[in-house]
Length: 258
Image (cartoon, rainbow, N blue to C red; front, side):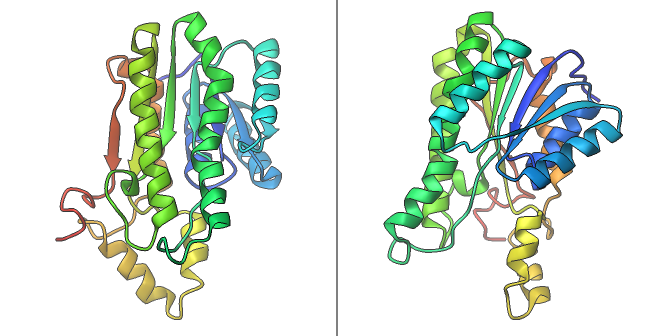
């Protein structure tokens, strides 16, 4: 297992799903984890899980769409603990719809979290990492960020933006010692996906259909995504920057056609 002993990490959207799995994995690897989320109940639950495994964590309430809130949190963290070693931009939301069925309000809501939120958080915490000369920024994109996804216009375009932002950040700061990468998961069995399944007339049929979009015939698990995040956070990945790593059960290998 890679070690994050002595490292300070912040994970946004860490109250459930992939974000919670990443925070818990980092805690088990020895990092001090700042669990950030708009969901206080979920965030404190993640902290309790980390502490129950003898890790160290704290919860902070954070709305990533607020630039002021992100800047204020960065000031507090830097004053109390110093620069981050690892920043994970995981907070994100989805939306179902084509361009014609997506309103301007829908589009702005998705982009305010998935794109502007990443901008706000990274711009708040990156300068201190650059000044110190080391750090790892890990962004959560999606398989929908490297190829188009039907009926997910706002979501897919926002995740394409995340991949683009990752590559630009990596190039801009490669010589500073700060690495920037993104993870591109396929469908992952998270609480969000499970809640979506419950909305279908036949959840079991919908579940099988979702699994079938991966070449290996199943959805991923949050801990499988967290394992890649752990690698990117660790010193062993020091030569990796600007990468968009697909973790999708073969989904993008065949462009969804098997």
